[in-house]
Length: 408
Image (tube, rainbow, N blue to C red; front, side, top):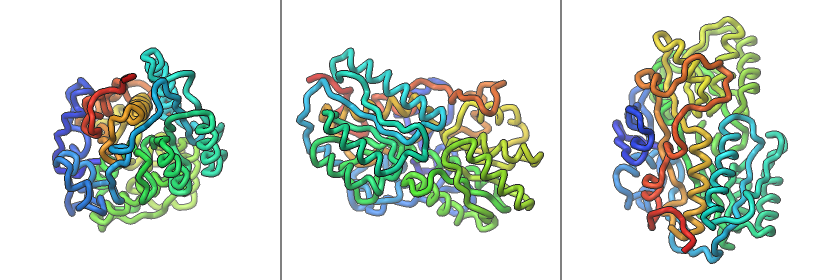
């Protein structure tokens, strides 16, 4: 996401319809002080990045790899509506994933009434993370194409391992849309819709911590998104010489797993922990680990926050500080599906990565988003309409031809 000191991103803020700060990098700035974020890319700034307006350059300066012009800007989809769309995901393990699936089905039904799609959303979602392997997802993609699916939305188990298959499908005319996951390095036919919502949460939280030992709780080992999220944390830590990483743990983007691994670490290491950075959706588990030992909860960066996270924070707003970067699953499902429809309708995405800033929350605007009285483990997500992450006006900025998909 963004890397400007102040990013007035009008394409997102109006959709929220409440008086909040600008989204994206509105709460952090690029610099060399602890609490500043560090630009990491793109690594080919003389490419398509050079042609962007400044607002998009600010957003894309946190993309750590090469950015390419999307082949779908010129390669035409020959399939005509009504289309079939598939969805492949790792095991649904949190409310965000559940709500993405729910919204994809709802958006499919809306599109079906317009004559844009037929049948039902074709899905392949195993019952557990352990069964979510690159091999199984590759097989699922190939099977969907044999079934006549025209586009695939995927939350890949390992985008690097799966990239050759996704690229091959793209060359065959089947676009693959990655749900909030960066593409594998060098890939072009994959279209990544990406928040990279840790930029604000990581840098802002480090600025609150300032010094001491911290824990980093990563997501799923080997996942490309996890690698990118972790690498941004490492870069931002360079601005904080008084902060040391005591340990790096894996929480699998699951509250229960995060609680267990952090609890085990705290039991074996009684030394004070000054803060925690986590990859997303695991705030409640980290908090529970500290509370179960009767230990004061340090600042924990909130990536992909839930309503229970914000309610817990709201109860302590006078004594507890952190920073969050958030979208909800309803907003994710809306964006992923409508990006897929636009590509099928030959609207022409400009880039292989569509980086869209998430909402930034800190102690100054927490009351706008937080609902009081919810348990920490609430399965509710933060409020906001499904268009609050990126509505149709916002999506227009990422496509050569504006407007929603139509049958023509």
